[in-house]
Image 1 (cartoon, rainbow, N blue to C red):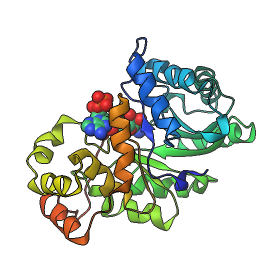
Image 2: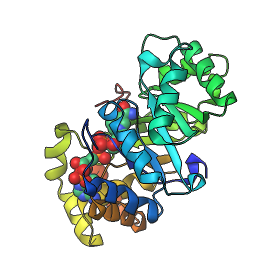
Image 3: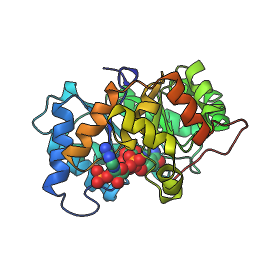
Length: 276
Ligand code: NDP
């Protein structure tokens, strides 16, 4: 499968954080995979590699070609010299010989041209199938497109959720036009910054009640209804994973979307790309 065939995946940030993972975290990931959530997002940064190790343990008995594995390289490792070593370390921890997608976690000081050429070398060697970026705004994407080979970028992973909709103004349209999927991180508004706006939204509460769902399921349904958007919620219990999966069955009506717009206004001007 290609990235654009997915609507939902599983995030792994703050799983197995520098410690042995709990059985519940393993169960959550296994349950997701068994039920079709086969896109897994991780990074060398998460738990300094322990999230990748957890994923590697969980997928050991799963057919590799049924999975879509995404990992990310630190900006300081995104050079010709260091990326190969970083990628091989990720592959070792994941127990696989290839990543489906390898992302630059955020922009650092290594020139984009060098990062693109390092990605392409890994691709030629078969260590990665595709590469992409994360936390890139429109100006970053345009700069990437001006670099030789930059338009081979296969994804941009950015913060996007119901209470942070800035990307809808320009970045999401740009990505759609250039056929680059947007991976929405923190789709459940993990950051404390948004908690009160979400908790006080009567629209969210009413819509959730009307669908017999939780507000979190509505937040995922809000993202999943859009072409070119793939949400990657992190859930450390099978119960949460099941709820997230079930959100794919929720269809929001035009009236419900209007109510959401009233509580969480869509952007009317350019705003700086939101990040965690
Ligand atoms: P999310 O928005 O996915 O929120 C995670 C929180 O939501 C956890 O506390 C989780 O609880 C809870 N949760 C999950 N499912 C449910 C549910 N059905 N009902 C209620 N609560 C639920 O936050 P993240 O910031 O983790 O983002 C998701 C993923 O995106 C990350 O794990 C990571 O893979 C990626 N990411 C990428 C970044 C980047 O810079 N590229 C930055 C940040 C994240 P519990 O764990 O108890 O289930």
